[in-house]
Image 1: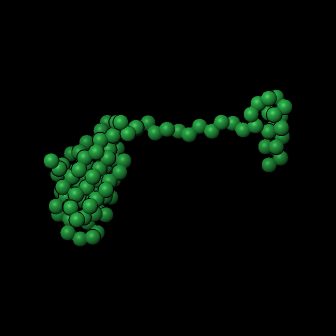
Image 2: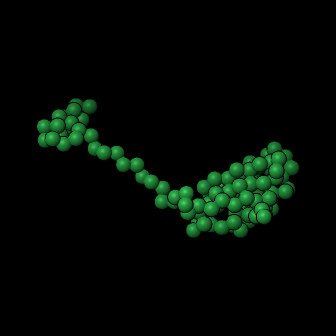
Image 3: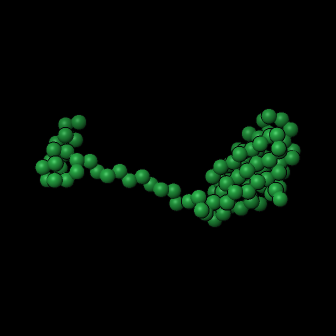
Length: 104
């Protein structure tokens, strides 16, 4: 604490700000480069199924978020298309035992 006080006092005497500016890192992936895709996941039959699907899809490199809706048997995924694609996400769900197909 004494060291900070000495440095701050020295900075003030030199006319410098006593604290360094704080710079927060920005994500390299912006919302403009992300893609949102909805999947049908018809084989979900219990309350634990959506958790399994979400975990499988979230494990794909490039996936930013996954929302699974048990009532509509669907999943909505936001991902970076430079790192993955809908087919890889669907395959991850299928590998977990829940085949998924792009809606529409």
